[in-house]
Length: 117
Image 1 (spheres, one colour):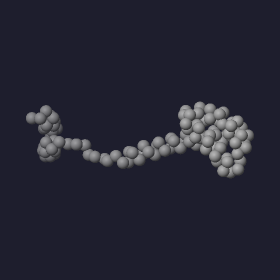
Image 2: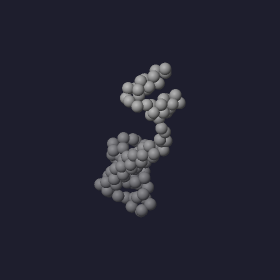
Image 3: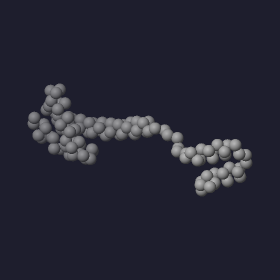
Image 4: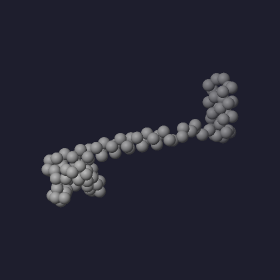
């Protein structure tokens, strides 16, 4: 395939600049020429190939961002929503606190529980 030999290095450099990765750029250019071969349009001119490579790179970058956002949403959804841990001694203190009236008594009780007295 003459077009790949002639334009492949230039397209790889362009894709590498856009993607920041030589292996991804190589995959992108090979995929482009593979699709052209399947469609029987292997011999294209450079402007068409540059535009096609640019579009593929932009699509990959867009899809990466979208995929990353979806994975983060999925991770957040998977995390169990556990109630905060409250030691058993605090549970009894909180029950007592609910029965007490007045702000001063509540503060004293919470302080006593916090220092362990």
